[in-house]
Image (cartoon, rainbow, N blue to C red; front, side, top):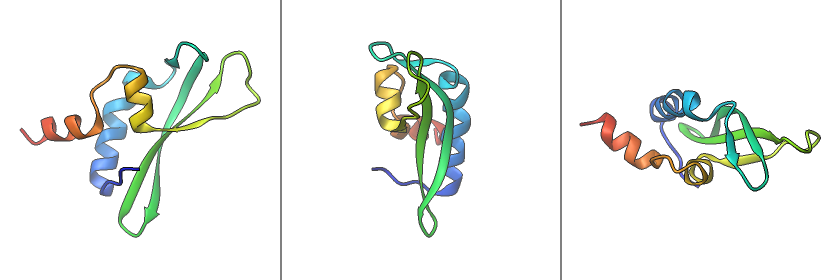
Length: 87
């Protein structure tokens, strides 16, 4: 699990939200992402996770890491996104 400062977590949430929210993240399981959430893991360290639902089974609410979600959608990793921000 990768932890971020609140500033970096907010930047990543703002960056990824338009790219992933309401999109299918996993074609095989038809996983639709509904939100990206910032959660404090420990004081001043935050984690990003994505919530969604399986299109064929809305009673299960999966939560996946941002790293897994961007990998399944072939998007740049959070580390790459943060490096580009600082260029």
